[in-house]
Length: 239
Image 1: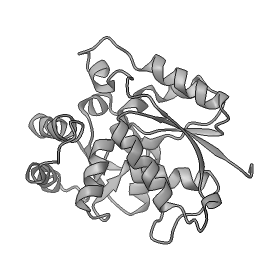
Image 2: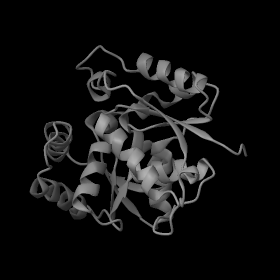
Image 3: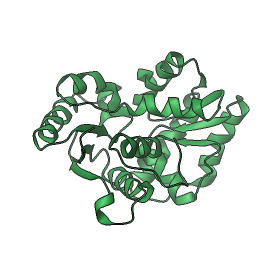
Image 4: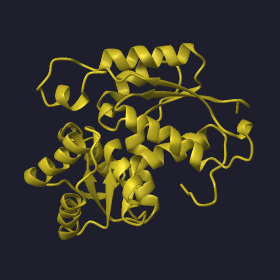
C-alpha cells in the first residue's frame, strides 16, 4: 500500500453532515501527533441540486453532473480513493465510480455489512424518501441476506420532516417525534435502525443515541475511510 494515502471527500450534501464526517474521522483515528492523521481533500459543494427532489421527480435538476465533476477534480488533485458523504446520492454510485479511475467507497454496502457483522437480524431503514423509493438499502439488505423493514407512508413523512424541516434547517430535532419513529420499527420486530441519512447521524451525535440499536452510516463510513487509508482506529471503535 502507498505510504501516504490521500482521501477525497465528496461533501456539501449537506454541509453540516460533511463537517460531522470530518470531525468523526479525526476523533476516531488513533493519533498521537498531527502526522498520524489522514490527508484529506474536501469538496464541500453545497450548491449541488437536491438528490431526493430529483429522484422523486419534483425537480429536473440532476446532481450527477456536479458530483462527477467534483469527483474528477478530487482525483486530479491527488486523491487515492473517494468517499461520498450522502446516502441518497449513492443512487448515482455506479455512474460516479465509472467516471473516475480511483475507487469510490460504497457507504450503503459498508453500513449493511457492519450491521450484519454486529449480529443484527432485522434492520429498520431510516432514510430520505428518495433513498427509500430507489431501494438502495433494501437491495443491499437482500444482497447480504438481511431482513429489513421500511416505514409506512405516515412514518416516512415524519422522518422527512425531521431531516428537512428540523436538522437541515438548523433546528434541534424533536426527540418525541423521533421516538415515535423508533417505536414503529420496534413494533415490526426490528433489532436495529440504520441511520441512512447524514442528518439523522447528527441526531445520534447530539442525543448520544446507543450504538447497540442505531447503526450510523456516517460512523461506518468514517471508520472504513480510516482503515482503508492505512490508519488505526481508537480502541473505543470497531468495524
